Picture: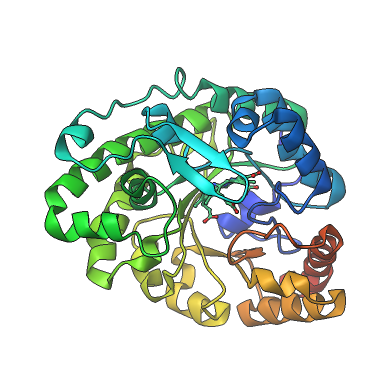
Length: 354
Ligand code: CP3
């Protein structure tokens, strides 16, 4: 494999010195880009786009053609695993994800198959191999999965939800059944991420989008404990290259020390925490990724630049920061504003690395 021409992301995630702060954007390939909307239209629907390695590769590379990003993220979705388990996923415009067959009863949980990532999820691995070839070492490729708790929440509820009431009822009424579901999903996520690593992703991120809905105690037992098992089960080095692992719990700002204890390489931060305080709390145990409020991107480019500068300033001098938003970029954002942010971070961060 060709060596990386730009390895800032990997270096910052491993807290090695960099010349400037690397940046990538959650949902960087997505509906705010007209070229994404055109490919999505050609595909017909979202899952067809995910299941075509050629089109998934095309949209993965689209933001890199426009912006000086320091990473590519595999174009796919966290819900590919439950889809491969036979839950019947559809993602329609404006509706969000839906499962035809949610899993709520013990018999349904016990009957869940464990997908083979190179068979049922082969389309993802083929996309990774194709993207690596097309990237030709320009920037690293990030692979990802949902956390067991977040995936289980969609699998039980059958759709997105504000409070995941059915899943929480299961948590309190039949925790054993939920634990069994989480154990199966954990095994599957571990296999899936290890297969992505074998196929060529150079860093992995676990999206625990709904961990912040839990109590501190439930977070430990129903989300973090399973992410810990994944961190322990991942292949962390390949051909002498360390594969950094990022854990992102949205709404998890109170639990940063506990997240660092898992031995992950970096922690994703939403916008509700002060990144300077987070750095102080986590110390040298993990790098930090984040954490600008995505809504800032609606503001004028000068304001975006100021907000980016404030985050860089709060993090302070030295490595261990990957700039990102605190959550995904939304469809109504002007792509030029994303460009302003990326340029601002690159320019303004240089003094912090001298
Ligand atoms: O970041 C990237 O550019 C990589 C691609 C990516 C997508 N989804 C593409 C996508 C990633 C990393 C995800 C992760 C994902 N998917 C998460 C975790 C991150 C987060 O946002 O908290 C979650 C919870 C999902 C589940 C999911 N997929 C939802 C809730 C939706 C609907 C979103 C909406 O706004 O309608 C999706 C669909 C989806 N995944 C889209 C994209 C670009 C939009 C679908 C479309 O094109 O119509």
